[in-house]
Amino acid sequence: MDKITLLQQIKNDLDIKALDNATQQVKRSSLYQSIIVYSAAARQMLFVLSENQQGINKHDLINATVEFINLFERINEDKGINKDTNNKIFDATPSEVADYIFERYLNTGFFLSTKRDHKTLYLPAPPKEAVFNKRLFIRTSFLSNSHPSMSGTGFYRIQKLDNVDNVRTLFGLPSYTVRDFLPLVNRKNDKWIKATSQFDAALPIINNQQSKQIDIIVENKDGLLHVYPQDGSNPIISNNLDYACWALYSALNLKRYELRQKVFNHNNIGKIFYEKMMIFELPAHLPNREQELFKLYSWPISLIKDAAKQNIYMIDLEIYHQLHDLIYGATQIKANQADIKSSKSNKARSVTKSDQTPSNTAIKQTQKLKRPISSEKNALKKERDKLDSKYSRFARSFTKPKKDAIDTVIPLLCSLNGFAVTKIFKQSNYRFISFDVGHAGVDSSKHYCLCNTNYTWGIILAKDKMRKHVNIEHLSTHGILSFENYVKVEKIVNKMKSDLIEIAQEAETTTNYWTRPYTNAILTYEKTQPDLYRFLQALRENNLPTPLEIDKKLKEIYAHN
Image 1 (cartoon, rainbow, N blue to C red):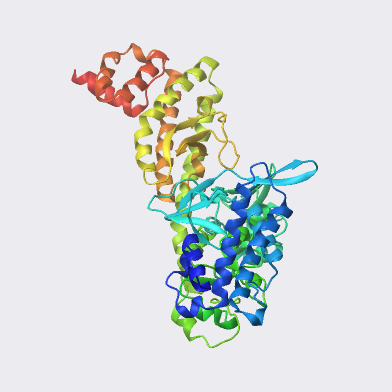
Image 2 (cartoon, one colour):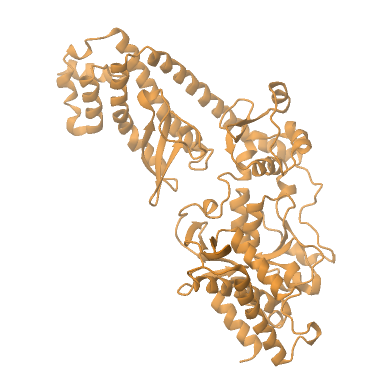
C-alpha cells in the first residue's frame, strides 16, 4: 500500500470531513499528511488511556503517542520521500506535538487524575455528549466501538435531533454568550469599559454617580458579578469575572473582537485548503475555556507548519460556525470566498479591519431594535414591583393560619395556569414541570436559580432526566425562552399574583364568603374544569374568597340556576 492510499484509509477511519473530496494536489502535500497524523495521534492517545483503566502517568502516555508519530516518520523514510525535511511529519518535534495534544484533552475534561505512590495518574473521564445545531459534540476516551468524525483533536457526529443537553455545560463555558450582554451596553459606556477592562481582573465596582454617567451598573454581591442596565432589569450574573469583562468589551465591538479569518499563503496552504477549512487567528483576549474549545477542534499551524504567528489555526469550516455560535451567540457572516481568491497579498490579513467601528446606521438599527424590548422590560418590571409590593403589604398582616391557608391554595392556582405555560415551553428545548413558589408567595423558595440567586416565583424545568430551577424573571436571561415567550409567562404569573391580592384583600373584610350558596355553583366545574374545581374547593375549605373574575362567574351561575 502506498503512502497516499494509507493516509486516505486513515482519513476515512477518522472521518475528517474537512478533507473530503481532496484533490490529488492536496493529497500529495505534506500538510495533508500532517493533518491526518495529528488527528490520528490524538485518537491513539485516547486509546492508550482507555486501555489503562487503573491509570497511566503522563510520561508513558506521551511516549506512546510519540512512538505512534515516529512510526509514520519511519514510513516516510521507507518510501524515500520528504528528504528535504528529514522525513519529519511536523515542524515541531513528536514530543512537542504529543504534549500539546495532552494539554488539549486535559483542559477540556477528557482526563480524570488520581494520586498513587506520590505520582499523578490519568484515567478516562466518563463519556458525555450534547447536541447543538444538528451536531452531536462528544467528550469521551472510549472510542473502540465508536467512529465519530474528527476536526483537530475533537469529536462530533452530524445529527438530526434537536438540541439535547447543554454543549456549553459540556465544555465548561458560562451560560451566557456575548449577545446576552448587548442590551446592557451602548456607546455611552464604550470608553469606560475600554479604559477599565483588563481581562485578567474583575470589572471595578462603581458608585451611583458613575453608574448614571455610563448607564450601566456593576456590583459584586456574594462573590458574583452582577452587571445590569441603569433601570436594574434582568441582571446578568456571572462567577467568571474574566468572561464578563471580555463579553462586555466584545459586545461593544462585535466586529472587532470576533475570530478573524486569515488568508495564509505559506506554501499555498490557504489556496489549497480554504474550501472546507477555516484558517483563523484566535483573539488575544478570548477567555481560556473558549480558547481551549477552539484549540480542541483545530489543527495548530504553528506545530505542523513553521508559522510566524503562534495563534493561527485550521478548523473544519462547519465546526467553526458551530463553535462561533456557541461562544458569540450568533452565526458569523461567512467571508466572501471570492474576496479570498482575489487577494494578492502574501500577508495574513483580517476579514474585518481592527480599527473598524459600527456605522451610524448600524447603531441606529440596534437602538431601534432595543427600544421596544427595553420599554417592555421596564413595563414588566414596573408591574411586577407594584404587584409584589402590594401583596407583601397584605402578607405582613396575615396570621400564621391564614398564611398557611394561602400557601395551600397557591399550588392549585399554579395548576390552573399550568396548561398555558406548558404550551409556551413547547417552543423551547425544555419541558415545563411545575411552578416553584416560596411559602405563601412571599418567602424565598428553598431552591436556587441557575445563577445561584434566591427567588420567590420560579419554575421547575426538565431536559432529558435533569431538572432545573429557574427564577421566572431569568427565563430569557438564561436563554431558556425567547424574550417574547418569557413575556407571556411573566404576564400569566402577574395575573396569578393579582388573583392572590384580590383573595387577600377580600379576606380582610369578608369572613362568611362561603355562606353564600356558591358551594353548589362550583359543582358546575367538577367534570368540565377539574383544575378550577379543585382550586375553588381549596379556597372553600380554607375559608378564603375567590378572585373577582371567578366571583362574578359564580354569581352568574347561581343567578341562572
